[in-house]
Amino acid sequence: MLGVEITSGYIMLFSLQPKEKSERSTIDKQAWYTWLKETLKSVVKKQELMIGPITDTQVPVLFLCKKTIEKIHFRSYAQSIIEKINSLFNREPYHADLRVGVGLPYNHAHELNKSYHEAVLAFGNCQGLRIRSFYLA
Image (tube, rainbow, N blue to C red; front, side, top):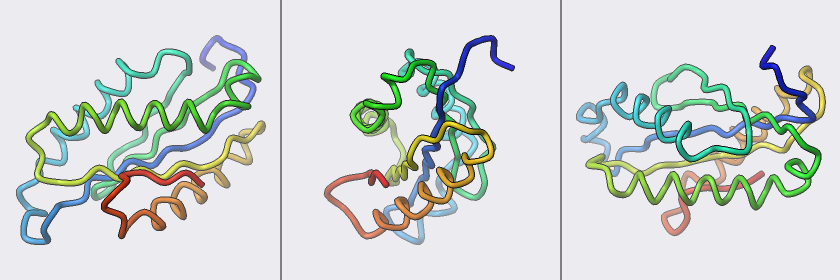
């Protein structure tokens, strides 16, 4: 499909959360989605990725690992990606918080739905957090 050997994959679920409920309508979701796609493509160099559609304020992203070592160190790599994205996000004029949930890596395509559900659960766990903007499953 992508022309590379894939050993595993995992899901990151990105979400834009308004800082105040009244600001929900002022957030330009399409501009944020375009920014997220461009930023992910510039930040992620070691893995293939597939960016899903925006639904409400959430975007699922599938990260495909080409080497076994990437799966072993996926947590530190995922955290590094999130920190870079968050740093760049904080420079943007969005009046919102960036939230990210990360699922575990799986070796088979039919198991990727587990990673997605873990990312959703991790995202749910970070909803009330103000100190960190992400949560790993």
